[in-house]
Image (cartoon, rainbow, N blue to C red; front, side, top):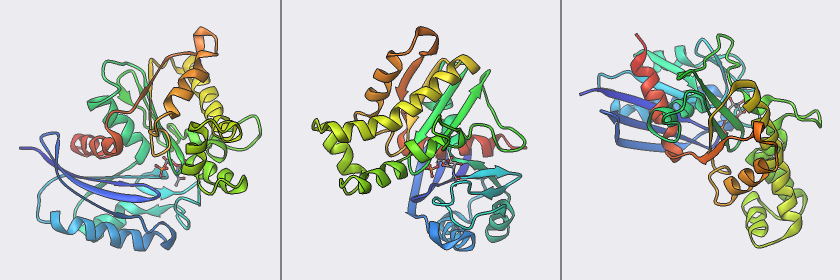
Length: 281
Ligand code: BMX
């Protein structure tokens, strides 16, 4: 029986799972102590690891951030403040007493969706998470694209016509800011208002969606993607995908491709990082 211990660390929650023969057989989660710096997160992950410590299995950690050689930098400091070139692989290796693989969370989720979910049957596949941040993972010619410098699908860092990044306009955090600014309270209330026909709320929500759609259109002609799956807290909210699909339908045919809902929900990163950890020599 093949076992893997997988972690998925997002800006809000950290999850751990024991995966056996491709199925999650045990899991746990805790809030990510995102504001407390890397050392506190290492301690939190070590607590989550404790029940599994005696199991002899590869360990994979998917985490939000830019990753080079197991070192993590948060380009979006709102997600993980204080993370600059932090040697997470080495720190967890020391804390766990075992070898650990570290991968970007969205890249892991893309690989999970490709192997076990919405990416099935594609040669070129894109996964996009619209969540606290905006992240992505690319499968090209049936392989997860991983660049040596870690910029292998940092979609949230791409510039918009306004000169700011996509993440600054289209993430869940951006929508929360916009909701507070326009007296909707939080992002959920803004989305609820939009769903109930509030024209101003609809325009604010659609603004970010249009920016995501433009990037997806550019990537269609750049990389020949056949299908994109949308995940993440905001991306999985009912109505988000339909708005994105409607926007893409207004573009000429060459910019359009299948836009679907990610199938594995919040488990995509766990499955993906498990597969990556298992394939490491
Ligand atoms: C940000 C960036 C990406 C990440 C994406 C989604 C940081 C810390 N993260 O663009 O590396 O994949 O957010 O992250 O700079 P999530 O936490 O919202 O899932």
